[in-house]
Amino acid sequence: MGKKTASFAAGCFWGVEARFREIPGVIDAAVGYMGGASDQPTYQQVCSGTTGHAEVVQLLFDDTRVRYTELLDVFFALHNPTTLNRQGPDFGSQYRSAVFWHSAEQQRQAEQKITEINASGKWQDPVVTQVAEAGKFWRAEEYHQRYMEKNGGGYCHM
Image (tube, rainbow, N blue to C red):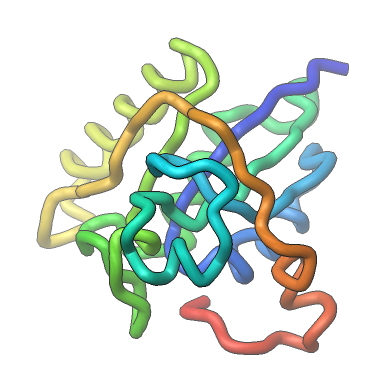
């Protein structure tokens, strides 16, 4: 089995995590924070917009069962990648669209996918998804993990 890691930010992380958990080949998914400047950020700190972190879902996947490009397809179908720091009613840099890559190949594939989406004319505006090297993943508080599963749906832009 080829275990790989992928990290995506697509707004509120609850629904994003739930959707990725449905994909055969995704071994695990956890919600947390990435892309900011402070250590061990809390949900309240991230929501304040002062840490620079995004709400992310970090995946462990078997690349013999699901390709990274397939995960990118799901990611871009889950949200509007043309809105800067906003998804649905949620706004702030913590809700930005971002692909945090773990290898040069993931970076290349993410940039290629954005080029394809922009060329397709699917969206009136260009994709503003950030493509950045993955940094430290700070796991979110336990009550956020599997939130949709534990709370029968709950609120989310999904």
